[in-house]
View 1 (cartoon, rainbow, N blue to C red):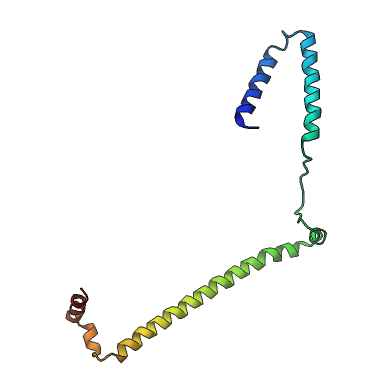
View 2 (tube, rainbow, N blue to C red):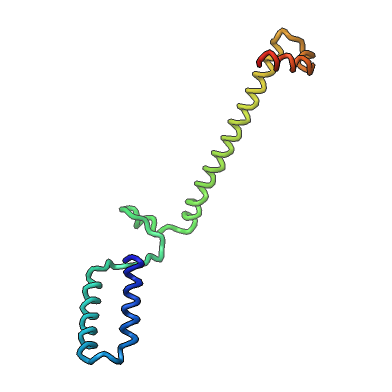
Length: 134
């Protein structure tokens, strides 16, 4: 039921409640009968609602997991957290090794170059290299 239909139902109910004393007895009887009929139809169509008070898993293994102890539930929370920590530390170690490898590559290129190390420290040489790449 959308909001327009719900608002209309509230307005009809309010209008009927305001003029309830002015309605003839035959009309109130017909309204009562219609209400009973509507409630009978509604109860047959509406699905049964049950609120689960425990965590329930669907499937054939639900009986096994519903009788578990609280420590099993705690392990179910701890295992994903440990996996997350292990994954993050693995990523950190990989990035650290990658950075060390990149730095070693740059050092090897600088040391194996024919230029003297003092050329890399000279600001004029840096300007000359920048000018040559433009």
